[in-house]
Picture 1 (cartoon, rainbow, N blue to C red):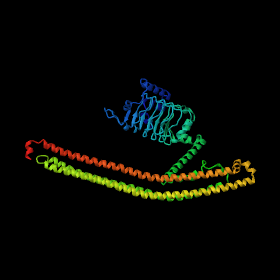
Picture 2 (cartoon, one colour):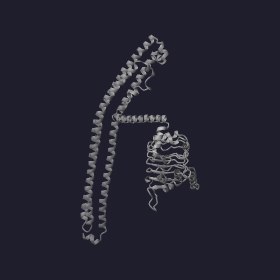
Picture 3 (cartoon, helix red, strand yellow):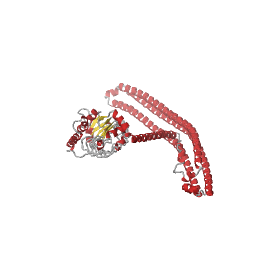
Picture 4 (cartoon, helix red, strand yellow):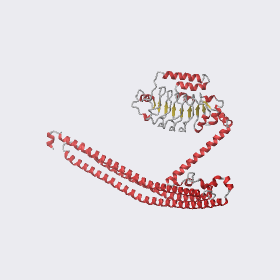
Length: 572
């Protein structure tokens, strides 16, 4: 890795980074020499933007053929681009480099990372020796493996969340001062090589221990191979309490992410069957946004809520079994329908190709015979052969158009037939959904009736007993039980919110089913319309080309007749 790293850096940078491995010259002296060399290389160059001339000159791969010019260059095919030591002030004009995997912008005067989001295939980015203060603009570089920000002005490690594949990161000679900054890099499980050399944080006594403890997957730190024993020692003896908390927090977050992924998968599956609105329905009905605080003080509320939950879960389970069965039928029918349409289209096209090939074969033979026999006495034969060929061409055109018309009528009929069958299925599903939501409204009525009765009983008991101890120990409960009108109004509002949510859910499910049906058949009709237009255009073009070729052969024969000598003409 060290040899590779040395080979790929500009000469002064390579000297600065590798010198620390040999133990000879100090890093500071070598870095100073590198900076001086950089200044010499750029002193005579004015600040500039990335121009087409620079882009053409900077292309490294695909390799330029010897003594060949790149102009005009096919930028979308370029995979490697070097724009080093050019006093470039900003990153721009890289819009056409969509295949770029390697980009070198080192040793310039760039102060902001920007305009790189479209480089989805970029794996290696070198921005060393610039004036960058913040790591940003890398959110969409999901393929990035190697990032060099060596010798910039960066104070905080961050902005790399969009680069989960990061394997090598060089942040040497920046302005990083705190050990806590390093903790951010724990999320990059594939990070193997890290350079922070030249930052003030490296001067802290606990630097090595902290890095090895918090980044146990590293193989190289500041260009030195990390002994396995050093990692084990750091893991066992450094900041154990905090590391334990960090691991537990990461484990908790990982479990949450896994649960979220599983939840998303389940919701996507339910959505496929128009059932996603039933997921978390109970939680929505009793969310803090809907549930009034008043009802939570009632002793009857907990049991009524639990009964509601059990009944809703049972009804949802029954609905899902029925709907999933019907939707499987719908999906199977839709797949079979689309397959049948594709088969019919393919067979029709193959038949058309066969007819056209057959006619072209006949045409070729006739025209070859015509050219072969072009001479005295051939005109009568020409006058017979070409009209016959044109007549066959007209027959071919009529047959191709008739076949296309027949195919289109058959497909239209198939779409209408399948639409009718699907309408019946969707109607049955809508009726079943309506039955579910009607049952849910009955559950809601039972719930609110029990809630109002329970509230009345508890309010009466509170008023009769005038429980002073309750008023002193639970002022909130006493306040709600002491105001009958406010409690009843809160319960009514609660029920109305439930009914509104239930109605919205039913409308949503019905809209999903009607929307699928409408879009499915509209898309198929739209597709058939454009397919039919293309076929007619293709047939028209084929017929036109053949007719022009035949007519051109006839005109050539007429020209030959007109230009024959008088003797030959009269001798016929």
